[in-house]
Amino acid sequence: MENGIDPRALFTLNYGVYILSTGYEGKYNGQIINALMQLTADPVRMAACLHKDNYTTELVEKSGRFSVSVLEESVPLKFIGVFGFRCGRDFDKFGECRYEVKEGGLPLVTEYSLAGIELKVLSVKDVFTHKVFIGQVEKAQLFKEGTPLTYANYHRVKKGKSPSNAPSAIFNEVK
Image 1: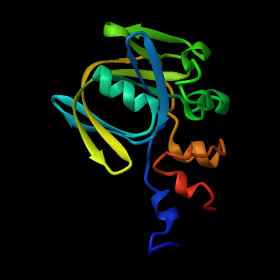
Image 2: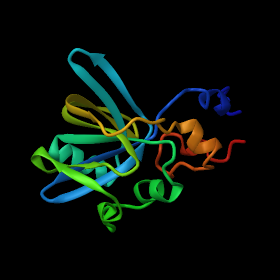
Image 3: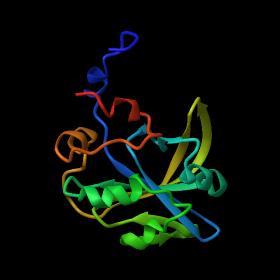
């Protein structure tokens, strides 16, 4: 326990695991996120948190739009790795999955996804190492019924780790 913070207490918070994607001038990129929440119901607004150094962050800032794919619990760890552990500057992540291109060139991953949400950025908040994008939901569709992947399942069942610049990476070694 460091500075009175027991990371196991933070592991009790419930999160989903998602792919946040965007496109700008014909370039697509996406990444695994768990820091996503619905803020309001009418109008439907959401917040997503991305590390400042990520290529996805750069493209979201330029395009002003992003999509979210809600991953199903049965998604293979290898698929998560494509979007979670490789940089889109050097690798075409979308060459490794099924996806649709939505209005305005916005990619939306459909493979291993239960639902897809398209958002327009309304504002951006700087939070030290990360940026929080507040978005207006423009479209949302259910692809299929199923159980969404949770962050707890990702760690406990799939034995997944967090990338080094994820908000939760400092807890990778906690037992």
